Length: 189
Image (cartoon, rainbow, N blue to C red; front, side, top):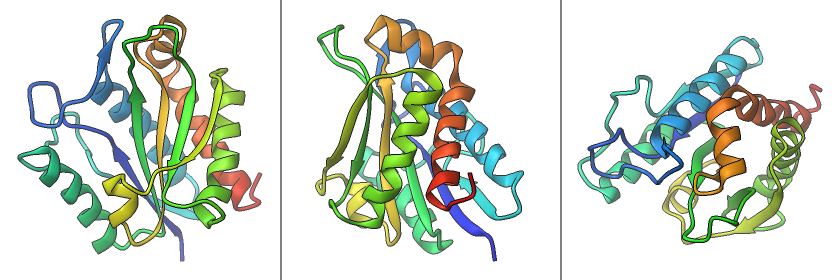
């Protein structure tokens, strides 16, 4: 029985409701789409895993508002049902100096935190972003409403020149970092 992992590529395509952040010529929804595809391919090439994407194509639009978009992502994961849920995002800030990777979980001292640690290490070791830590954020809809171990990963800041360059040029590296973290969590690496 493979481990079922649902990969939510944050946000909808440009021009749709719930489109993501922008910075340095990058669009969050494009970066998250491609990182999710790479991660799903890595997982699906390993018979121990089965991965599904919230956005199987770049044109996939989920929901008709921010609320229904989030609800649809959660519904897809819960009804499958997935064992683990990863929501992939990119950060932005009015302060261009802010940079680094953050992972949000529903609650500390849970499987989500224990899984987030090797995932964080995998990302920062692979692509060289700064480790901004694992943060409890129970208010986040996708963490609150999913029925499985869940985390929301902010890969890096689109508004920071260094992070943006990594997010543009090393999307496979971000996916590989998450993949390595998952492998380490399960003791496969």
